[in-house]
Length: 323
Image (cartoon, rainbow, N blue to C red; front, side, top):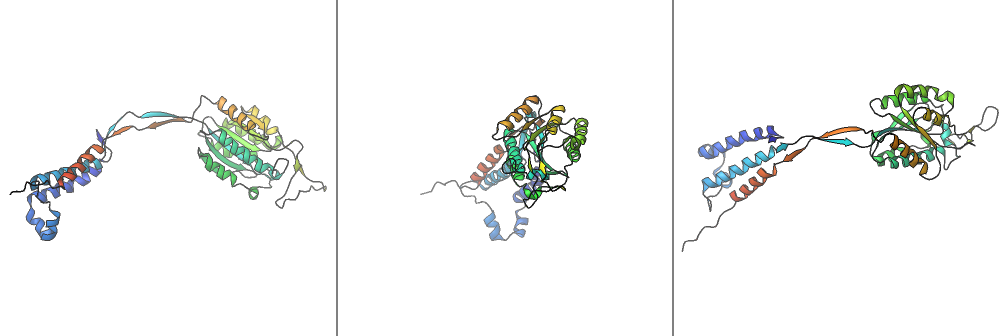
């Protein structure tokens, strides 16, 4: 048997011994410290139980409660618990083209709904969230609390959209640092894609960091006008309206790097299929092991005995009345 808080035992036992010694051997010194009336109130009555016996019971009660405070336990062998699930990094595209309305109500809101559906499809997994455009940043650290992750994603609105060109290389470098200690390394993008020139740097980072890429592509082949912050179509230098189409090159890059992609549609089947692919590929891999300390608690035995003795010590046994 061991004590979880042995220091509490030694802190309490020393004054307890001194107090017991003073009570039992030096009543005169106590009389100098306390007023007679106060001492009379503090002293146990000898009615029903002899004073010496009552004192012994009270001291024993206090002693057992001190032992309970030190928390006696029996240590058992640590239990190894396997943590189920994967660690994934998700990334939400907030570039200017995500304002386009070829999907309802626009690409950004549509991508957010798909991302939240993905959270629901991976309930036991630890997921981190970043947003990316010209400069990527962390929206939420890795967490298995899906409701909190959803709340963070819902908070991304039109004001987050960056009209600068998307820097996929910067996204790859951030992902590489965030996933450095993870195994396997998985990143899932929610985006309308990027051309081969823009994603060239990302491909190198993924290969060097051994990151598996999965992509959820939003938007249509036909495309839609690029819209500015005021809701007006952006015009090219030649006076024509700028049109943005979904670019599947990023999806093909995902397949080349051991991942997969889906074109987001209505309903949940697309996201459920992607989640099934991810789970199927890494079904034998887990986040790791956690050692859980096991012990049997014994503090309630001395605590219960101490309280029982305290009750007896504070009680008065009935005396036989002499006639």
